[in-house]
Length: 503
Image (tube, rainbow, N blue to C red; front, side, top):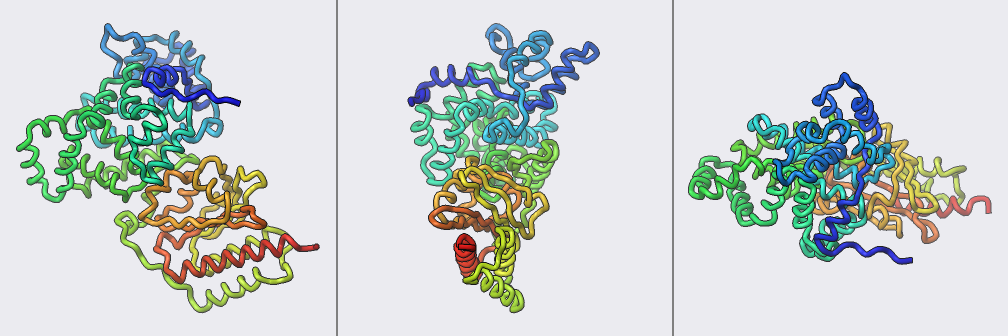
């Protein structure tokens, strides 16, 4: 078998991404279709319904601006819809596939979620201050990453490879992009945005990141001195070009997307702090006030999106404040009584004559042993024979829905690596930013922590179980790690004994 080689030039990539048809959620799609056939619905009401689906909004704006060289491109959905008319919109939507969320690839849905979060940040932070420009702010921030939507929809493996090499192995981003795509990602996004006729601020935003790096670095340097606003203002006054550039309204969409993307990986990471400082400098407000506003808008975004199996940064705001500022608390040592219980569970697991009639009984004892070893939250998942799926078997200290959790191993590079052979991954504040994006959102939601252990357990050379545990977001002590390791060894022994029962 042969595979079609990936494009390696900008024209080839534009042609490939232009041909990508993005799917939309079935529910808002059905509502829009009904509205288009309802003569009592106004153009504005229909536009509000289309607004529920970023992909449908993108399709309308692209169609309206496809041949708009002689006219001013439509900067908002309502203008674009008025330009193409309802009949043409209905024909346009007829070519778009509608699907249930579970049938749309998770990488694409995750990128759209990040864009919706960015739009919420843009509306909350900037639209009220620049009320006359709220349409440009809203739609430009929402569609800023739309070229990446098409890229991820067509080649999800590229996102995974980029995350592995840039976030995990720390290779230079531009070098990785050149290797994977043949072109720089920012150059590709600029070219696609221009070809699609996206709002002008989007092209300006990408050029800010690619062509104005010197200005950006100077602004970041001034933004670091957030505790001295008068000194910041003096530095900006001394550089009129920088002050004029910094206060461009089009910069708001870059700030909003920077805040959303960096928060997606880690609220406490250095990248998130840089974007927060820069947004604070733009708005001329203290960092603490800016952070409070950003957290509120993240929560509002999560509420608007509703329940999802994806990861939303607002879930990370449930973490204790100590973790946000990377102040580690020491985990409490188990009491003497608890250690006695732990030894009893371990003796049971190590019994030469298997005391268990089924796997449920074995894993129940294993979960109790891990809890007595100091683990406050425990998730035991069994691996199916094909290594495609992990299913929750036992939980401790987790919400009720954790008992029904099922995760596809293909969703995560980290899970696939752990399923290759028994291994331990210890997450901490130093590596959380690297691995956070590589874990399924459902697991991150259950363990809102920067101190987590993931351990795959095997039998006869094959991984059969995954343990995920933490100590309620406290740093692991050496004794706690030893107890966890000893407990896992007992579980491995119990699995071996269980497999030989009845022989």
